[in-house]
Every structure is written in structure tokens, then in C-alpha cells.
Length: 68
Image (cartoon, rainbow, N blue to C red; front, side, top):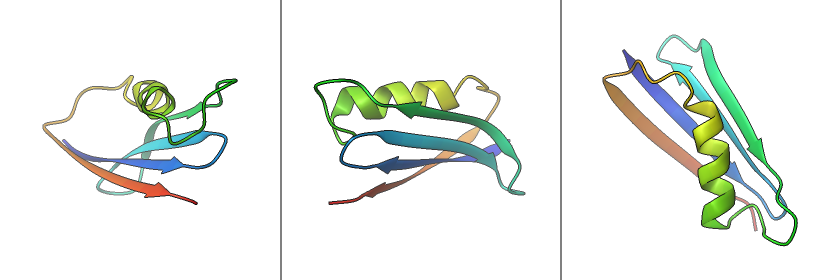
């Protein structure tokens, strides 16, 4: 299965969404950690790991957006 992991790293939080190539949502995540911003690697990692609870893919495309 081919999937897309979309990351939206903002100033205060990071959101993530895992979808298949048909647009079906397979997982999502969000990280809002006190003391670190949404663009911090720990915030991005936490949001991505939440979305990647389903790991049945053969190809993973990553799309990232950072506001700021």
C-alpha cells in the first residue's frame, strides 16, 4: 500500500495526517508540547508517530508545510 504522511508544523503545534492514495484517512496526530514550538523536531516526531500507528505501507510519501 502506498501512503502519504502530511505534516503541518506551526508556531505552537504540529498536526499530521496519514492517508492512502485514494484519500482515505488511516491515522492522524497532533503535538502541542509546552516550552517547544510546533516546528521543533520533537513536536514533528510526536505528531508523525501518532499518525503512523498503521504501518502497513510499502511506500511512504512525506509532505510538510511550515507556517512562519
